[in-house]
Image (cartoon, rainbow over the protein chains, first blue to last red):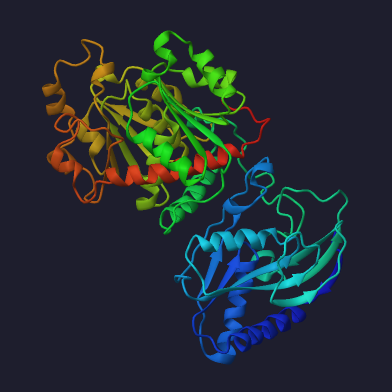
Length: 189
Length: 336
């Protein structure tokens, strides 16, 4: 099933360019700024943001990857533990402004886990959040600072982000779940 | 994250509830352990080497035999994952009052254990425990039979230096007869496609030559064959890895060896023998070492000796195993 397309490749590209400008504008420059993608699709998005920033600022921001598997609050509910993809931070986040990047924000639980994970590496000066899609239904007091597109959804729908680096194409689709949403698995948290 | 509500690892994950030996692991499953270990190594490099993955999980470490590195390694691994750790040394428990293994396991379960890491002098003890215990059993060594976490940390250490092990010549030298490390290593190294050689005095090779012969005609699916020999020089020639095993004096039946001195003279790993191996050959030993018996003191501290790396990697591998077993599929009973 392909579902209803809500973002095209061009729209994804424009959203990333816009967010890249917002990041620099809000931070008033690029000093001590660092991008950290949340595994898995947050990582290529963070890399694209870094490319976009480099194009208009001439500065290459450090890009890290964060695997939040070990910090999930539902790990004990998952029958089969997820395969870990790995964390790598090229620079020390201490004292920097860290921009967490993910494809979709949903319940906010992934972001909470990501902030916990980041705290184990030190004390960033600030943590900000950039997402391609905000689909609502937050279960925690967390909001995104930079959003590519706000998409009203119902909880029996799923938002599927496809990226060339992972899926071979750029698109965002919305699909209807045949079964009730579940606590385990890679829910778009 | 996957934006779908589907499991991210359907069909490709870990299905074992217990880990009693490596013989039940497919090569793909060994790869899952290796990749998960990579992630654990990264945690060990952090300023805070602790993640909350196993918070609320009770890991009981039940050792009926003396051990330093394995027991401490499991304890550190479990604590790095935020598990609650209970240590039981059989020598100071009700075992000394005559409690049976089954009763001890039932007692530990009633006290809230989710996982038991167990070492016992009797081969197969962990299998018996797995039949009784409703949680996961991780075999930390049973008699002469198996020591799966050691075999996996050995493989991880080799791969860290040599990459793909296919066709790499690995020699296990020494008292293989009494060695659960050797037996588990046969399974993991042949699964990884290494050119495995088992070498020791002929009195100590009994069982292994029959095993090698059984596998020679095509062997078992997913495992390469291996070579068994008493010829040290042939075994060591152009080797990529030389693993010396401890001469297990406490398990040594009378009559297998004329004397320690003769054993050392004929099979001990010294500089002269090692010269036949590749100049870069890794020197390994699962510990504890009898220096001057199976390995010369100067060989153990060579630059290419990775004996201390084995210990460090042991923590990461055991973190990976605890993590994977804690999420092991409840219906997937292994080692059948």
